[in-house]
Image (cartoon, rainbow, N blue to C red; front, side, top):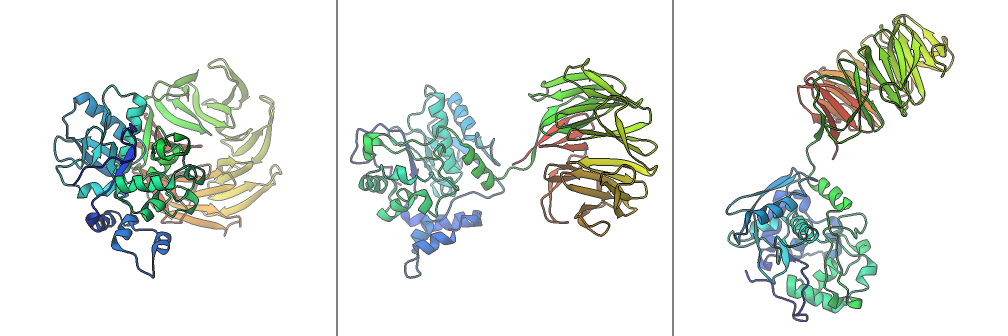
Length: 538
């Protein structure tokens, strides 16, 4: 394989931009076949084929050029060898920037002393370059697949990161970001065509398609819009640009780069550890705010960072439950007293009720409800102690649930009732199934769980209007957050509903230590050892 030739019309050019290295033309078809075998999604899109077909025929080399070079969607770990024996601190610095992509997708790069899949050279004056994705598998084992021209330990952090992360993007199969029409209009068309013919071996037609076709006209564009901040943007020398100004891409992995690579290589669901206190017994979520309650009554609010970022709000051994909504926080004591937080830790709690019969509290928006052991249901109207309106008094009531102004109650017989606005008499029966053991409300939806594990969502028609979403006998609890429904199994597995009844559940965790889950804008779990974790959704 011959080395890359320098452009003939700017021998004094000092640009350390990027050249996307290509295989010899006689290897294109075989490399494309291998890429398709590794990931069938690499096949050219239909609109590419329709555009390039001439009298219904596309040449094998043209078809190969239209083939993507992504690795398998299940993720990839690639080995890395340094060919020029650089010092250990240089190798570590390179690997740290290569693995910046690992933080964003299911990819990883690990060093090996010889025969790595990625082989990095530091050939001076050859430019920064890399082969594209799976093409590295076709490069002879004694030749580099990536070159980091001029990088040393003295290179600035910004430039070091830009170069390594850009070249690593190529190794992951990411081609260069396309240009907008306004940028293309600044280019000297013939110089651009000549440049890519000399450096890439591209024909005139290839360069027009890859470089001189604006995003809106290109079937090759990976993103919905031009991303001027993309780390994968071209760096073109100023001699072929009006005004003699280099065209530069982004300095780091952009938000759109991250979104795209996550789609290519989705990460397995992961959880961030937020606390490790063995005294934690329950968690409560209000939107994006998380609280934890300890067995000794101590109460904490998460402010970040993980582990150390918790602010204590109270320390009362009588506290047995928290409820929170719309910025309001309440606690229920084991003697029935209810307190509302006014913003000052420890001392900033206002007593709003003292009824020893209270067994539960539920917060919804600016409203607070309480349930008594006699079945009475009360709504707080804002006046401490005396300011509670009685909404019902049925001894069969075992649970209440509320969301978005809707209030429901579940009876021990399995009957579910919805409050219509008139105390005592204003309750509509919406189901009568004796197997129902729990109800959960979120937004305008209400869900029920049966003792057999069946999960139903109310569709608006009393009694008959319930849709079955799952029927797993292992289900022990259901939790709902904004637009999301979750279930937990008796073996600790946590699942999220993704929209298809019965089959449409995504496994999020399978730790047997999982004890309970709570949902707001994000999903959290607490484990039997007191660990609190937040779900990181990709």
